[in-house]
Image 1 (cartoon, rainbow, N blue to C red):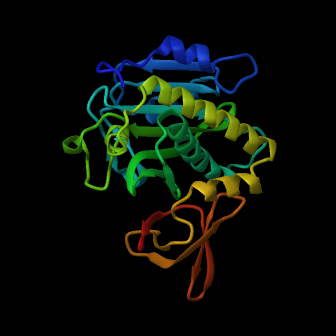
Image 2 (image 1 turned 180 degrees about the horizontal axis):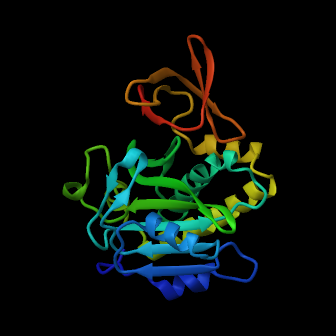
Length: 271
């Protein structure tokens, strides 16, 4: 990876934008509070679906349940994408975060040759440590509901820059394997290309696709584990993560039978 890892906007636009493709617009800003919040505002003002908003520094990034997410300027990827699924009920939009995670895992495997895996529903891991988080949010617009999907990837952070010990970065994981991480431009391009293919499959199947569930399970480190699903501050459920259903929900085997969850924080209880 170059010492000065500048995101090449012209290259991204050339690689991603084409007639009939998903990506219609790619923008890069030097700084943003939250790319999700900014793109949601633009969506309400009529922004075209297929827009990607990337920032070099995100000062007020958000994760699940209001958690904050920040990284030093130039050290990671903070981007949000705007999509409006055609003819798919919003109740099935659970899949959008999963598609983004699968795109990140596959993109990092291709661009960096790193063994990325998924942790249902919103995290991507390397060697059991999180390097990517995803947050999807519905946005109601004059043209109907849309979704903003935010993706945050730690690229060049060193150990001392990580927010928590359970986090990692592409640079750390690459060094552990004797390699170097790819440029941020390469990661963005590869991830967005992978998302476009996965999104096209999902939309063509009207939001339900058993083959996508199989692809997700193949990359998912949660399946087969003893897990605790945190549903609220007061409520959690433990059991074996059995499978992902066609709606992208996690099926957990408990002592009282199978339970299905469309959202919730998951803790892996065994290796």
